[in-house]
Length: 472
View (tube, rainbow, N blue to C red):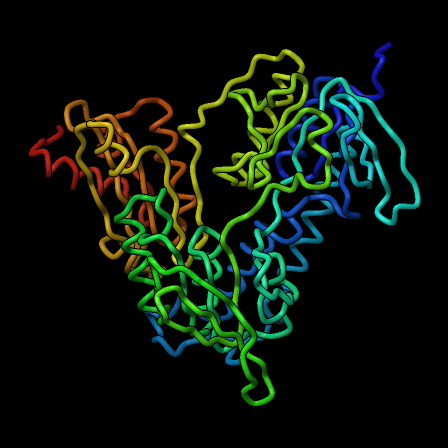
């Protein structure tokens, strides 16, 4: 008999926590998953990934965005779109995903505990009910911290959840604004800025950096910036927000005023403050277990997702970049395998990235800037959606698929896409990268017609033409 109550206790029920718990349960370990909320799924299902992507789909449908190239810029499915219209689909999907997740955990015999967890020492946790009426302690041989993140807030900004709010508050907005200022042009800021703009909201996007999404290939971000401007988004890049305050009322509605360090001022109905997220470690007494979160609440881990304290692992958004649900799931699985001595590997450099702006972006492998800094000789091949029959059929005339491959060996090095279905289309390139394939593969492969997948063949031909090579 083990001297511990559980073989593994997981703190947090988001994608990373779920996968860690289920993987350990499949290894026939005694597993408990502790979640402070009454519903499972964490930020991902309840306020983050699932709601925002469902909201995006509702925006695309109700606004008629996908049909505008055919029926004109004024086309819309519904004239006056309300927050209630947008949330109808969102609420349905959230309920379904919560139920599916709970069922998966129960089916795998993971014990679900609704409580707030905090460390007493590196093997002992205090579990306290949400109302503080009861508490108990449990011990575990291994512990996985998957607490996720919280929206980063600045003390001097008067957040009220309605006029000045974070991405966690969006589902609680009473109505759509006519104008909105978005502070922070990271993934979340760009996604919501593009959604608001698609609905006809006048958006001003502010960021201290000179480029949107600096980890993305610059040609792709340039295309995104162009599409945002075409949708009447004002970009204030290289600008710092000095202060945000509530302004006077217009027609009975209070507004907000942003003061930029450059002296500019922005007045809008609402302000979405999205300068990043902070690891949710402030309430788990991490220091009592010997853990030291950084200034953004994140925990440091090694290649096996183990913290400097043996037996304690951290996975998901709480460890920082890339903070994607897909990568978090894999981190949870790998951490549980390592914790119990099961050899399991993954290939992080081949993890795909999906950014659900409008239009969406996806990428896998290296970008041009990385290859240039590494001194790798490369060439590119491009295909525009407007060149492909499927692009014309679906009405996406601005999409772009870009292949990057080694100039000398023609080995594929990266795939970058902006346009409809990018996050699905990327997996073809991911598979070829995984097997060290060459760009020749796309030339010799027959794709269904008409599909967006044909972009791979067109881009490959374009790249070969740049090299002056003819394949037979």
